Amino acid sequence: MTKQDIVRTISERLDLPKAKAQEAVQTTFDALINALVKEGRVELRNFGVFQIKRRDGRVARNPRTGDVVNVPPRYFVSFKPGKEMEARVRKLDEPQSP
Image (cartoon, rainbow, N blue to C red; front, side):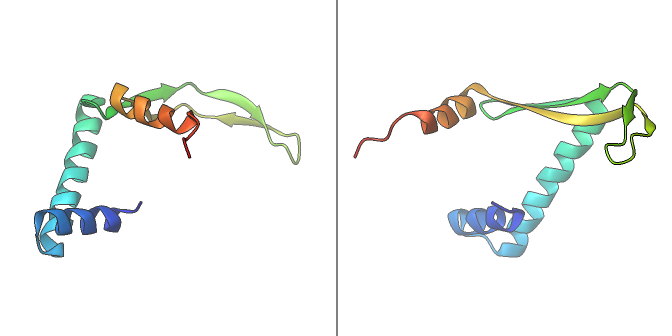
């Protein structure tokens, strides 16, 4: 699913012009990103938690040349699904009845 698929779904379900749905989706994404950068964590009940984490720097090797490479520390976004999402995804593992 892409952002445009989300826009189309919202537009059809709420009978909104696509431009308004696009604006709503983009505003929502912008608000999530801003909150994540400012607070370091965004929790959406029944969906999941986005959190900024820090990965320490390390020494690695280039697999082609074998040269030692210093990898600097960096921040990244992690996602942990909520209970409802986890339960619905796990149902995919259950055998389907014919």
